[in-house]
Image (cartoon, rainbow, N blue to C red; front, side, top):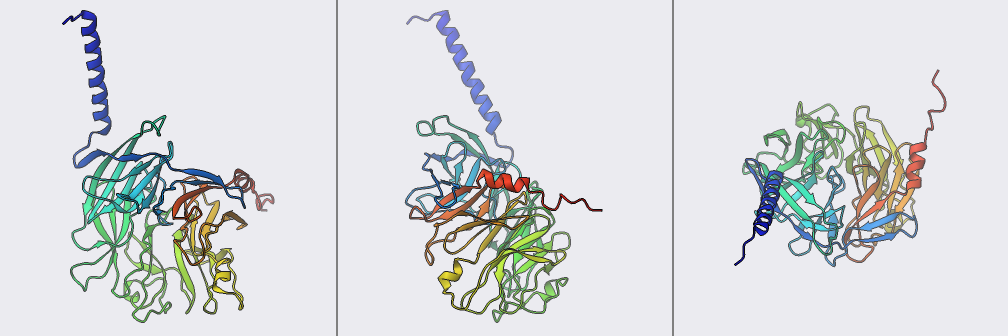
Length: 445
């Protein structure tokens, strides 16, 4: 065996480089106390682009596999804070919570060593996912090394997991939802061992992991889910009220009253301030009035769908509620007429609603799979996409937003089975809304 000084030097350099790379990897991904790091499975891209034939909007189908893939619920954060990943769930084998890597189009599975994750939302700040695994509340941070050729060599995705806390009793009954300042996450908890103990709205300190009750609610009616932090006020949480013992939808609940006036009233829209823990009914629905699928928007406003009309057809406008003044305005009008069939009425009424974080847009959907957006200032309507559901069949679109107010995510049946689709608002629409200075041309005297 011939061993030269040149070969020896080359081997030393190679060993030093290997050690340097390994040390760097350890520095980048080493888990702190209480954290665990592991790689996530990365799947090749399956996305597909197309242009909506009616509107000209760019449509990106994140998924095209034969299984059903669904976007997160409309009032959760689907995009990570840096928009590097879009979260969704899948029925495919070993699916569950998954993500779309925006830089490469690859898909990732959140296959943690201790099982799958559910009830997920992206964190309001930071490159992290908040989720539930059994009774554990976990935070998963992602480090992505994007591949330049994902179909040949997959990207590398390292997850660093931290168990924030473990519920001592009961179980999660809603998805996690983060506060806008990134300090807390809220969720609803039910199923306590003590049957007399009512359901709770809880919050978790994302730094310390401390779990605490925000408020407890009588059972019945408890709450109907939809626990969500305000997108602009870190002290406010809304939730959907449960129905009373007789299923009534209205009652004499004073807006400033607390839990003692809650039971049996059946009102939908409730807000609790985490500083005093008193639930307040912020919109008094009338008997027979539809109030549904609310979400927070900007400036302490809640969006919801609803209206009042004779049965069986339902009138459902897109409405904007200022929770402090009680003022309600219609941002997107629905329609009702006596001769309308249920299918005809559903074409002109709205079911889920979410607003962009910059306040420029409100997105909504109907049971025919049409995605409509309304200008936040003028309420002018723009049909963004259509044909994504057949009336009476399949999942609803459940429209949600990216972080910049440029893209809408929804579930689509346009390709056959359920897929996750992202529609980009055409630049001409964005420019027109941005340039709108109506009301500013006349100086106030």
